[in-house]
Length: 96
Image 1 (cartoon, helix red, strand yellow):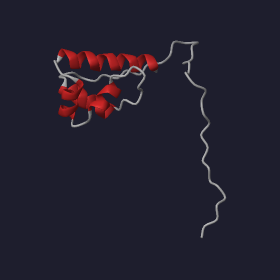
Image 2 (cartoon, one colour):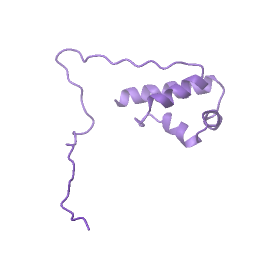
Image 3 (spheres, helix red, strand yellow):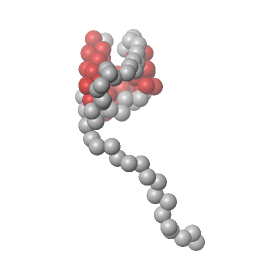
Image 4 (cartoon, one colour):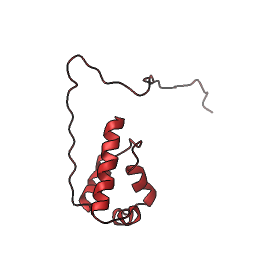
């Protein structure tokens, strides 16, 4: 997903700059902090929410488009990290 995160970051930064806005100015329009805009424009950040992207797009007079498509036959997606098994820790603590 890092390639997609890089693309999103560059698109946000480019649109913001084309609008003549600093990160601080965009943050004010979105009623958030400059650090959040910096995060959104960081190539390594992968926590973009669809609702925040829509808010940013609205302010920058753009639109959000999401495409989910199948991997080409015979190829699997490579993970940057090994998957972590999900376990619920039910513990054996006694209740008072």
